[in-house]
Image (cartoon, rainbow, N blue to C red; front, side, top):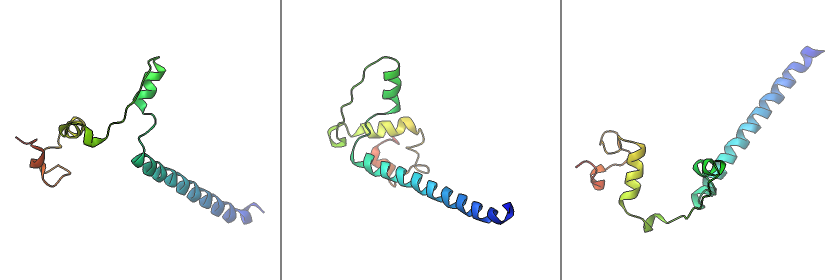
Length: 100
């Protein structure tokens, strides 16, 4: 009797796994779309500060209102190879004046 139900259970588990994977993927894509339009309400740094007893505030400033060099500085701090032309994700790294 148990052998007859085995293919049914395997198929049901496979369907459940596929549905779960699709739900997780949908949730991730929805979060990407939402956070593309809105700033994230909280970050891991904010959580760590709150847990340590500190208070925090955040003021989102549009990219157009900050220094032109700041985005490059942030990228360079994360990826020290950003300004090397053979490893750069941009087509013209000289436009950033980071090679000189």
